[in-house]
Image (cartoon, rainbow over all chains, first blue to last red; front, top):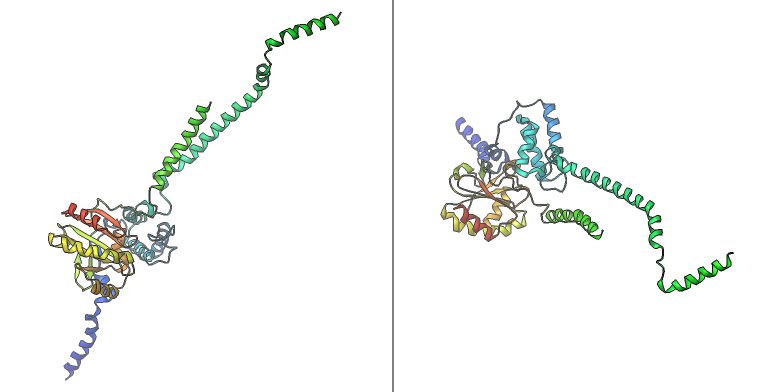
Length: 183
Length: 171
């Protein structure tokens, strides 16, 4: 009789487990995603793991948001990514490894701050162009001020009216009259 | 003098217009296809029926991996395309597999009971597989060739035309 009770009890306790196909833990236990590389370090200390996770969650972009970091977004996708970051950090993956993992999958876009050292030209180009512009402006201004200094003389010479041949007769007459008056 | 002004203006505006033309020609919302041409990340997940499914099982055959969810309308629009493709190309040895993205298994079961399916649907706890594939929204579909290389990633619903041409290319 005792064994019957034990059997009944076991059946009742085991039964719910057998129906637990939906149970997240069971599904999670089975789930495995292969990672390209093993972690480079041993699992870090708690405080270090928390700090690294926080830094990475702030540096990586939430895949479904507009310009939000994983840490800043309340979306399910960001939460899943945040949890994944934490898992990887706790397994001993370095910050570079985790960043690389996400960049490999989502592209360089996933980094909120693009890597400056790889695209240095892109960041220096505006400064360079501004320099070129300033030099150009300087020469233009100098040329213009030189031009202003010269103009009065040149214009004076150039704007002297050329004598009208039709007026030559009158001109001589006036000059003759003036000469007649002068003595 | 006029020619010099014109040349100066052109020197500034032509590269600027070219840059803008190149920039506006690109969809800023388009995610990178960083994984195209690279080996498909391996995974083992549980189907909605509780069976384990590993991508390794399908090695040596073309595989279509479709990330979807029941809250995504474009996924429902895409469903018939997947159904007809699986009907036509399943017998040719193409494996079709769906991965549920941030959704309840019960909702997925209810939808698939109504709409039907010719492929296993996998649960992805924690979205690890979706992250491993760089999924940034649903639907996203990955075409994996016989060697296990991702040859194409389609973000958004796959059209019948793209589905057929890509599958023909993989066979």
